Image 1 (cartoon, helix red, strand yellow):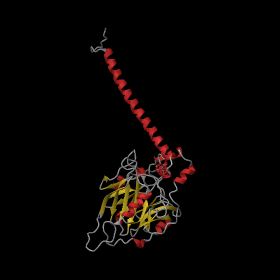
Image 2: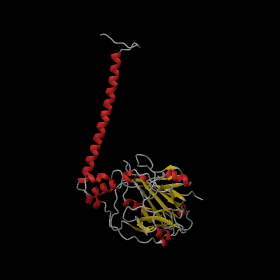
Image 3: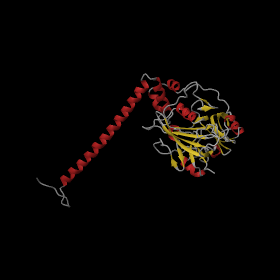
Image 4: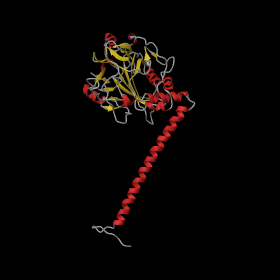
Length: 361
């Protein structure tokens, strides 16, 4: 058989055959990957179809709430349900009047044990800052306890509005020289791609109203007063300032706070919510601040419902507690380390506010 040699003396036909073989291999690998992706998408769609059209009403409610609480994929609920059905599944219990925060329930000077209960004489004082793990059947997370509530305040990214963008929690921690921090209030986040520059609701930081209108009623305002007591309620910015709130943000889900004056918001019926990453804040009777972050959208931690958050807060002695912005925003840093798993595909997000913890004095 006649051979065709190139200038190097190589067999041209054999060389082409090897290149063709390599091309076939790459092509086949790409076909396998594409086929696998298509099969995964089909399997996911069929799974959602079984849940959405199956007999379990609780599964349907969890599905709707889980995707509707996610800016980027909330449209999935519309594949299977009408707007009226979605609204029904998103109900999460009736909206009720919220009691004014009873500040007498919080005595910051009292001596308590590490669980927030009255401590016997001679017992060692609680730790200034303590990080513990929490878990449930569908979630894992971290709870940061700060014994001195005066160390907790709202950090801001800077100027607010469409012309500005927010900052990442780690950057705000560095900006203020804080020991720890979590995400805080909500922000304009159209289709899950907001730049964190425009807060939802009012923002009060270190005694100054940074965002919001004096006469507008906001739901819910979550903030500490000058006596370092946590308040949760519907109020105008002027009312918040009149209460002496030094640091505050807003968030509106669920329709009732997790706990108000020692009474859980789900005492009469469920607060609802799907399985998602979560962030929440609370305060115990001795003033200890509880910052809770739950991992979600992962195989080892699907996420938590609002009822799950309530149960955790009650177990750790909270007399007042409220859910904060969550999902891909949920982050908890302590001493420069990210203590939870960020659920965002693009890494930590930019946001307008965060709860920060000053270093121990």
